[in-house]
Image (cartoon, rainbow, N blue to C red; front, side, top):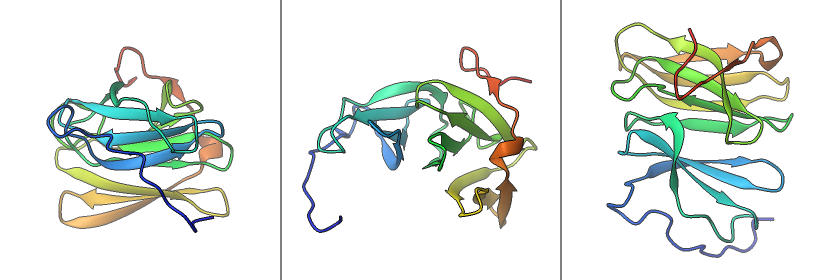
Length: 163
């Protein structure tokens, strides 16, 4: 209940993966941390004991151009991730959904034009809608509302975003 805390020890051993800016997802029996990295991939770690201990961080199947990410656990148990699905650059900006943290489905491409779309933040409001904000070409902050009931999910195969 937030009254006591303990350290689970370091997850990031500096030059090993160079992970920063974690986001935590709750799948009921397991917690997952997703992190920005310098390794060309989003890095993940898992806990099956409510965060008391964590698995060794490993590269996920999702690309990351050393760009900020954010994720949220939805009321229906799925997770939403906002990130740049590319190895270099900050465009496109994508939204993916997973029911288990291992298999991610393509949901929405928020931006595809040249430019920088980065530092996303995502929440789900009481009405069930997903709200995300992000920097738009480093000039503005853009706000997008997504209805998860209207999404058509497609497979991300071999790390490739579907057309």
